[in-house]
Structures are given as C-alpha cells and as structure tokens.
Image 1 (tube, rainbow, N blue to C red):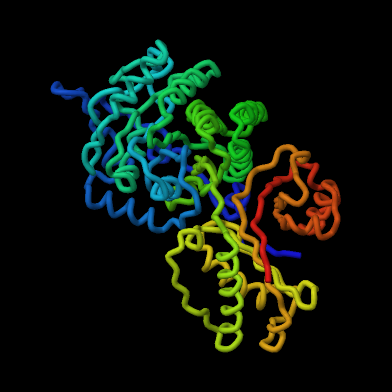
Image 2 (cartoon, rainbow, N blue to C red):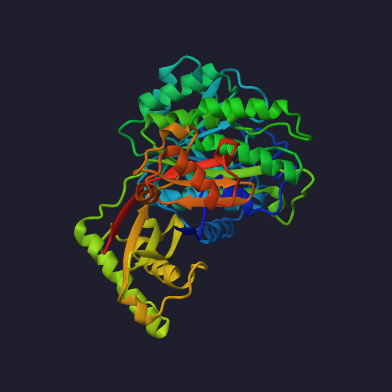
Length: 503
C-alpha cells in the first residue's frame, strides 16, 4: 500500500548509530575552573571554558560553528522550546547544531537558557543572572534584565546569584551557537540547584507568567546518559528520548526513575539536566506546543575521541506548534500537474523539469507520499517522511520514486502513464502515541517501529479497506513484517495526518 524512504523520530536516530561516549573532561565532566570575578562597572560573566571545550579564537570558533550548522538539514518548524546538549564541541557540537539551526525558522529577541548546576550546590533552588551580559570569544551577549527580574519577582525561591554561575559550563557552551543563528537575541541564564517537582513547577509557572507576548525561545541544556557502555546507552537514551517525545514531564520523571532502578553498569544519570528538561516540557505545553520532534541523536563515541566502553549521550529535540500548509484547490491542482509533468519528463530523458514558485505554501518543508493507480489498482507508492524538503520538490522526487523504485512493481513505462492517476498525501509531523484508543480512523495514519522493523499506513488506507482501530493496528504489524499483536508489546507507535488529493 505504501513504502517508506525516510523515517522520523528517536528510534530512527538510534538505528542509524554505530557508537557512543567518553567521560573525559570535554565529553561532559566539567573541568575545574577558578571563578571569574565580576567586572566592577557591571555584571559581566567572562568565558570560563573557551580554549578547552570550544575554540577561543573567534574566527576559528565562528568557522567551526557555521560548518556544523550548514551540515545539518533543517526540518519544518520554529521552536518554542529546544533541548540541546552541552559537552565539548568535538563531542556534541553537531547535535547542538541540529537544534540551533531550527531557530532560523522563527523570529526571536530573547533566549531563556536553563541548566542544572554542575559544581557547588546553589544557595537557593533557582539562580537567574539578571543584569549585565555574558562574554564569549564572539562578543558580548546582553541579558534581558526586564524578563530576568520578572522571574525573580515571581517567587522568593528564585534569586540573582552571579557567583553561582562562575565556572559553570552548561549555559556558556550554548552561547556561541546562539550568537551565530540569533545575533540580536538577549539572554536570561538560569541555573537550577534541584530537580524536585516543587522547583520544576515554580520555575515553569514563573516562565509561563512572564513569556506570553515575547518573541522568546526556551532552551534546556542537558546531556543524556552518562558513562554506560555504547550498547547500553542506545537503550537508555532511546527510552529517555521516547519519554520526551510524549511531551509529558511526568512520564519522563517516571522513565528516568525506572531506568536508574535497573542498575545499568556505569550509568550515573539518564539526563544531567532532568530538571531543566521537565521545566521546558511544562513551558512548551503552556505556550501551545503540539508537536515534539527529535532532530538528532549521537553520543561521544561518534567522535574520533570517544570510547565506546564509557559514553555520554546527546539529543536535540524541538517542541513547536504545527501549522499545516494552506493547500487550496488551486495549489493542489498545481502540485498534481507538476507531478504529472515530472513523470512525463523523467520517462522521456531521465530529467526533472525546472519549477519556480514564490508561493510560501509550496516552499514549506514537507513530508510527502505519491501514490499511482492504474485502472483503479495500486501501481506504486513511495514517500519521504521527514519534513526537510521543499514541498514542490518532494512531490517531484516521490512521483519519480513511486513510478520507478517501488520494488513491488516494474518501472512505469511511457505508454502506461496515460492510464495512471496520481494521488498526493502531504504529511503532518509524527507524534508519539501512548494510548491506541486515541487513533481516529480516517484522520490518523500510523507508523510502527519495533525490533529494527518498520511499517507505515496512510490515513486513507483504513477507510478504503473498512478497518476498525484494532484491525488497522494488526495490519500495521503485518505491513512491518512483525507478528500479530506486536503493537501491544513495547512498540514505538506514531500517528500523523495528511492532506490527500488526487486526479
């Protein structure tokens, strides 16, 4: 019925991995650093880890970051909240770049950066740096004092303690990336001294009272598993990212607690910034985020300097609000005509016709399926799931793929093309499903990932076949080559919707 050419989500990231982490100082463990004194004329936090965790030379630093940013293929979506790692750039830089690159899709004037303290315990549960600026080799980043003081006034347990931030790395390491993608952004640096539920809620509530109306992004700075083996890290980090994908901070807390009880050798934490992540998840929900996208996963053994016997995991996750493209009848007709013209050209000389448009809806990054039917019977169906290709271009590429690359059928001939009718499905983002009773027949398509197998069924398939919810799930297992009932057994299930139109 349909085949997959690109898979979304955390398990796909994990399936693509071949290695993990090294608990060396620049992989995660903060090096000892002497506190940097406050500048008498104002509060200036000078860099503490430049030259070790990342280059101190500004030209080298800018070139390194720009190279990592350009190597990432962005996906659709402007973040309300990001999770990014905070190890040395040779370890976690490419994963951080996957998160920060997404900021180019939005308009921001302030970034709230939240991290857990990694040194001496804080005197209060939360410390906000409320005045002055932070310095990196790329220059000065001013603090948004108005927003920072609004947070401090929101709760007596939130304080301004500049000394608490001296020598801490989890916020500093993010700033050069922010400077390259959002050079005019002010910042509000926040350190959490505890991850208990009361502190998580008080900081989330303070942010939700102060952020509405601002062009803000909230950035949680955290690495994932610390010091298990490569093989164990893939399992642990997969479970943690899957919990984050649900958007439920309670699910994350429970998953971390259950994972730590398992006694995984070498595992000292599942996420060093558990508190900031849970705050960020609550803030994302409060700001209206309806989609969670895992952008990239890696671990320190993916670096040439890593040791697969002891690893640190890194994930980049985006929380955002999806707005579907406005595919009017005229735009649908334009895409169908483009698909047919593309097939005509490709079947003649193997080329794709040039196409130019300034229509922003056809220039959206989108996932697409193209289905071919000949005399009412399926003749080919292939799709690209990740929303990282311009919509019109994805339609062209998937039209050719459906006609020539579906292994269930011989390549389409020029003579057959006149008898073929095209159908296009423009996909929404994929959302982690935790309750199968939430599946809506005719609205949701399904993706399953389990034991290295995968299967996908488009929303219209269940309607065409007259399936109920349980039959839909059983057929999904069969599509993936998995045994009946596999969806009940710790499988990763995702739902999605689609705008479907055809000739």
